[in-house]
Image 1: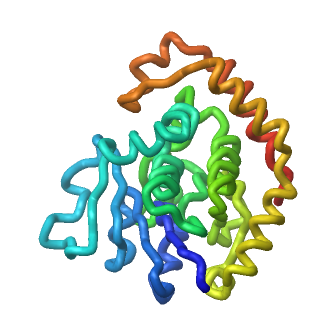
Image 2 (image 1 turned 90 degrees about the horizontal axis):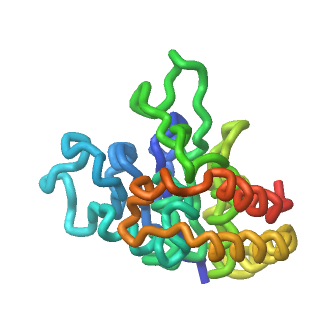
Length: 252
């Protein structure tokens, strides 16, 4: 039996590599923001409230099998994992928690979400030069690798494997690397082995400590608009939690 795979596409320059990839049987494709333009066979588009209407597909560009999702759907999903502040307030992670909650995949495979940006005048997104949203000054985004570890570990607790299909040398995603060809070859036995390998690389005491500190701190806003409360919150306390999430994963 083949695993259920969700392909999550961001707007990094290398997302264009997937243009020629055949869609795997039963694969679901989730595009983030502008990434719906990369392939016409996407199933879900996830975008925040401030994503301009002009950049979204018009109803005539969407088939009956395609849905555009906003905060009213991804915020509750993130809340079930502790809230957007702890999950990481950039769409690569926000969409990932929605996928984990709503679609319950066996594998979440990312492309175009390395969140590494070159020199100021270089191409930052597949469509040219854009805003490096994950690198903005924000209490939730002080350590992108820590938030990546958190998502990977939370997914693993649900028997879901997170992988990065990017072949770029640098990435803030800490997920194991995989080629698309190899992704298509994974069966249930191989998936079980990969999940086992990942679990062997987790320091569970660090996971428990990070979760304990999140609960004790209690920084949570049901609306997802954490920035309305952030002025009263301690960024240093979030950095301490991030350090535990960083230490929780010993993989490559």
